[in-house]
Length: 332
View 1 (cartoon, helix red, strand yellow):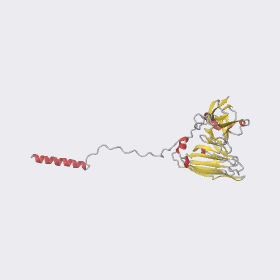
View 2 (cartoon, one colour):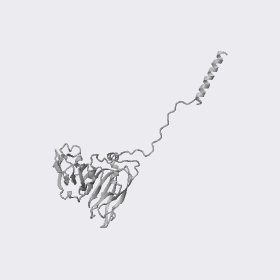
View 3 (cartoon, helix red, strand yellow):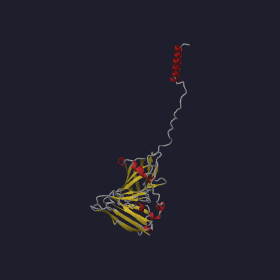
View 4 (cartoon, helix red, strand yellow):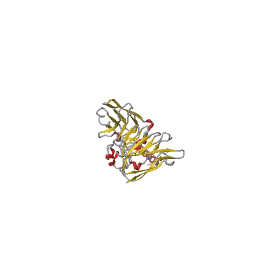
């Protein structure tokens, strides 16, 4: 066999092998594992705690929903509209008004097993006198001529009953529903303080008929401004454990700024019957902070249950540095 023939045979053999590779007839190499299947169930919610929900939304886009408390006659009353609808995860301002022409004050309260106030993340309740902050609210009562706004993000889907709890008013027609739609998989942690004693929510002294209120002590704290200093007047209070107090907070109309009266650790240790201003009565398990608007005033109906010294402060930046601090001392 001559050399030229051998070289030609070798070239044909190599070409055949290369053609076999191109035709895909050889065994495949290692393959990448298939992608995992998509997760089942609803996607995770974008927020969980009240603070996260409140920070998540754009409050400039909040939708205002208005409810009027209507008295057609002494025996015909209603919420107008009586049925409300909210979309989970969106910001709302629920404005409730009891017209000055009405003869009675009225509650806007939850009824039944579902509690609207515990299904929403509440930023604050605001009147023309003050802003109130709490982990959640139990009820609001509007005085004739009063109005308030609840800044809230509905979270937990469901249908929630509302009612005026003043005897007879439900029978006269003052009840309704609030539906929250959407929000599959949404969660809500109301951020109730772990050291808050839940027994305070059912303490009998929350009732206005309790004997502790017959001899309640009235105190007042003003909010003073000068060019060089801010102050609570008086800055320091001395209270007695288990005594009822009506603590008035006043921000005079001549002031230039609104001010907080924050005593966070103290607020968690008191029986809170209500906060009351010229518009409404506000009920909550406990307050986190109260902000008094210029010319506004409110009254806190409280019973201290623990002794100790608690710092009061205006938490608006710079106000404490100008002197707006104090103490509440609770004695045995």
